Length: 147
Image (cartoon, rainbow, N blue to C red; front, side, top):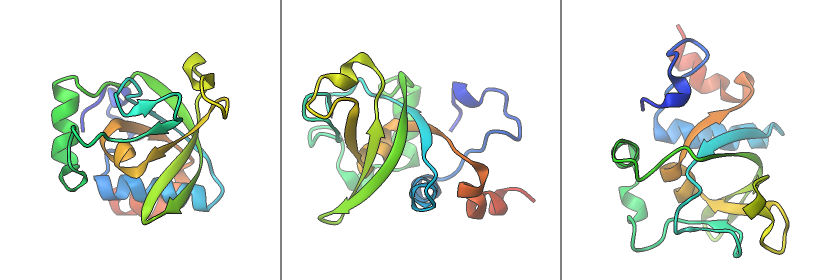
C-alpha cells in the first residue's frame, strides 16, 4: 500500500501483505518487544468510553477485510492516519485476538482504565496503516523480502 509514512520508498520501509502484517505484530509481542502503530482512531467503532476498537457490523463483514478493502479506504480517505499508539500486548479471547494499546491522546483517558484500551484484530487489519518495530521482530518476513 502506498502511504505517506513511507514516502521515501527507501530500505527503511517495507510493504507487507496483510497476513504477514498481523503476524509480525503478534511475533513482536510474543518476543517481548512492544511497537508503535499509526492508524485511524476517528472511527465509529473506536469507543473511548468502552475502551475498545472494533469494526461495527454495519461497516464490513470480517471475511471481506483484505488488502483491497484497506487500499480502497485509504484511497477514498475513509481511513486516515490520524494517530499513533503504543502496542504493549495482546490476548486471545473466544477465538479473537485483541491488542492492548496505550493511548496518550487526551481522549485516551476518558474511560475507566486511563490510557489503555483493546483493539480487535479486525480493526487492526482494516484501520492500522503502519507499524514501527525492531527489525528482529519482523525478521522472518523481512528475510523473504530482502535478498
